[in-house]
Length: 312
Image (cartoon, helix red, strand yellow):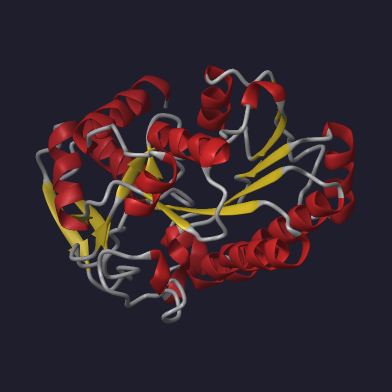
């Protein structure tokens, strides 16, 4: 039977962030009345005492763990130690303390960065352990993948109901457009908008442009997470995506045209591409809890650009 969200107390870590705001809205749309969003100024989840205070204060039936220290390739290269430690400690302590308090269900949200650098496309959940992740984001990806190890171990030993979800790169209104830490879509949108307005002759993009990525609109990701919270009970990890990929070159061209920039697009091959390709096999999510992404990429991209133009 689906979990009755309207009867549960739910903690959403990271619920004030980009993805979290949409997850909270989707929970409320589905009838959830008791949703608590901890703020980092009061509950620093890297600190075990703060984790214990949070769970004793909120007394949740369900925890959806979205909180993470994240960024694009540049941020991962600058902060590999921080990204590993803080993501690892948040996840490990939350699962352990939730287990001690008999939380009914724990939803752990990981990352596509956990996949090996070289793995057959589309990525199948069974290949998650078939190699080492791409080097620039391996510390982050491995820290998040430890949530899967912990989830399966705790289910085996304690019967603790934990599920593990693997979303691809997200995008949409409300994304992070800070060039020092943003991911590729918001970074390119900002670059092209500013270049268009300043009439700059060239926009430079990291890498060769040959790498590919798969993107999931943030509202679709929120729907998937809430559906899994309601309906998914297996210890097997689940991909969340659209099942389609686009090269960085084609992505940049699409954003350039959407913004109206008419200058030159130049790729800097001295900068890293990151993982060569990303595309997920998505049948497990469809079969396990009925999720299929509903937002066409062109529509989601246009909404993201419009949001940035209105809110920057």
